[in-house]
Image (cartoon, rainbow, N blue to C red; front, top):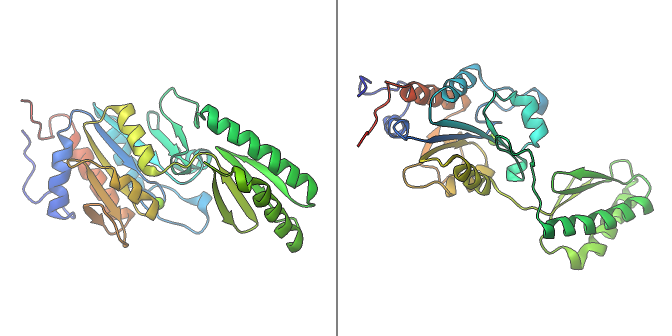
Amino acid sequence: MTAVPSGWPAGLAPELGDALRGLAGAPRLLVALDFDGTLAPVVDVPGEARALPEARDAVLRLLDTPGTRVALVSGRSLESLVEVSDPPAGVLLVGSHGIELRLDDAHDPVGLGAEELARLETLRGVLDGVAGAVEGAWVEAKPAGFALHTRLASAPDARRAHELALGELRDRLDGVTVRSGKDILEFSVRSATKGDALERLCAHTAADAVLYAGDDATDEDAFAVLRPDDVGIKVGPGPTVAAFRVADPAEAAVALVALAALRQPGRAVRNEN
Ligand SMILES: [Mg+2]
């Protein structure tokens, strides 16, 4: 048994402290964390985002604790997530809101099925045709689809490229997610959410209990798949289905530091029955 004083961890709501104490006793714990706005303060230049030092230290301590896995779950591409998070060995990674996964030795980040590959081929044919027909349009391969870029095209040509692509694909978009952005039309054959990713992570780690923390609307999909004894922490303002909330990444780091301390062998309250 532990000698944790009542009221500890300091600086956290007592209910969250209790919940963390409960998690600390799980034989196999998964700590799944969004990156931007959760571990790292949001910055103007996305490439300059870095985890708070306290948060990174807590992650390292958790990784060092038996029966504990840590995952980063981000909307960034896997490549970008690796760049900004410099993930310590043993961290599981989810990029592109669940489309890309790097789980231990599984280096097939997308792992498309036969139907998805067939859709990908259809997309490739149509979009290559559009890019060939419209000056300034070009196609970028994405983890599970393609982006049609028109930034270098004139406005009328850009419009024509988008119309051509959507027109040709109109009857073939079953199972394809289309996102329209500035000078870009994105097609993805995989529509994954952070909730799907969290379920994959739970299966992969055989976790008995999960902590998930995130700040954004897309994190709600992950909160929604948490089980009764799991702990969801919403970081910052906004509506949420998470049971707990902290103000900002600094306070999220306090929670992680507390969990790491509680989880240390000999410190945690464990039910050995
Ligand atoms: Mg975020």
